[in-house]
Length: 309
Ligand SMILES: Nc1nc2c(ncn2[C@@H]2O[C@H](COP(=O)(O)OP(=O)(O)O)[C@@H](O)[C@H]2O)c(=O)[nH]1
Ligand SMILES: [Mg+2]
Image (cartoon, rainbow, N blue to C red):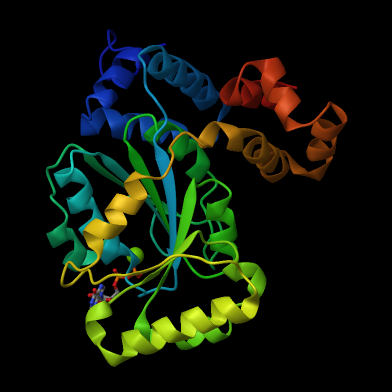
């Protein structure tokens, strides 16, 4: 199948250009990984096969959640600079309840200044979340399957505390919750079940003095009271660049490659979302998602088969 720029450009060729971080090629592939139609699943199958045959390895996927204004995007901007300075590459998928499908102001103007705009080892994608209250987009997992093969690290930034945290933790190798000092009060109201989900907490805006101390004390107390085991707490200031290299080092130590193990659960979710409960029951009766994926030769082939079944 050809990729449509020119009759002679094939998907494996686009995949190779994307591996070299050619932005246009990456964007062209992302579009295919966001497309819910069966024809796109056929393209994905071809692209993943080409990338894997070309030696692409899965990078790590990091979930970053927190209330609006917590400082997530500013943190991502600062970390992106640190990651690239360290020789790494990074893709960011920002899932935003308010952003349009394309062209949404993604990191905000302030952060964009901190983000080297022409750096090929950095890639941004903004996606609208499925629900008004946050959470992932229908194609976030798919896009991560692609981007994790092209970049060392993929950050999935989601808005909200609660549902989006649970959804992003289901696809990420590690998840961090960002809390701003002025939002410290919300720590007291976090349910134990929610506090268990992040692998670590980031207290942002550490330049704000006493508020930051108070938020830190509240978070430690809340973790103790909720019975959640020890969790690392990182203190950062995107504005001053404090704590950024430390967090970047912690992230660089997170084992990559967890996405493949997430495929059965994400496939089951896709079946339920796209084809309904009767179809989900059919999948279970047929032995479950993992067996279906194995029998059909992977995620995209299984989507094709299920859509045609
Ligand atoms: N003082 C201070 N303000 C910050 C810092 N990081 C972000 N902010 C501000 O907090 C607001 C929200 O930041 P943003 O990164 O967009 O938060 P997001 O909604 O969680 O992505 C903006 O006005 C930022 O300028 C920081 O380290 N220190
Ligand atoms: Mg943001």
